Image 1 (cartoon, rainbow, N blue to C red):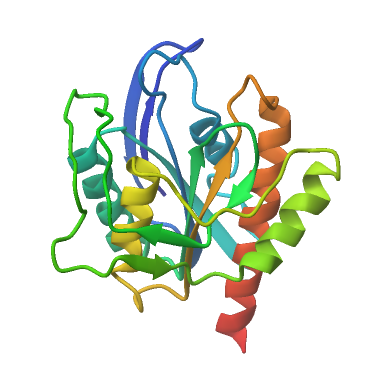
Image 2: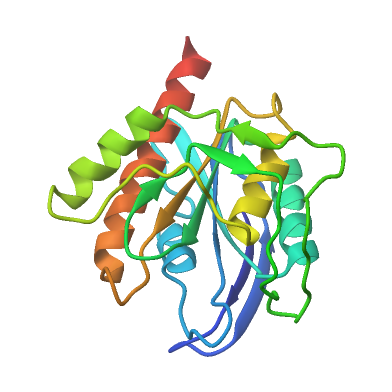
Length: 219
């Protein structure tokens, strides 16, 4: 399986790449490295707990993207080319709640990436203003909420922001129909939810999507 791993924090800086192809991958799952002054990113830590997991004949490949506009999409495109997944699910750090995104917007804000690059305006000059995700939002929501319990903070989101999360999912949705399903989930900062809860939420969402995609391929 292929991994692009950039992580820092308690384990220190690390970067690695393995290029063994996955057998019949169903789902490509991606998160992000820490950004800004934050030492950890729960999205990247959560997705790597599922790298190589097989569930009901569906295999998951996971990677952690750099928080850099150009590098992130190059790594993501390379992983898609290698694994040819039927579905792609992005995970990113949000604010205080878990949320399944319903759409991506053709916009970039003014926050610099980890290389200090600032982009503003639109992602694609000729692109549509809004692109709807192509996964079953209610199905993914149901799996996540069952895993994290009724007391965990959750809300459906119609705004994926204007940073790398929105940027990557917008560009992936422009590749449809390359994928049977494509979407994005935001998880809370570690100050609002422990990593163990985020891991449960991401696992539930990923396995539900992998299950549905694998089932559709057998039909």
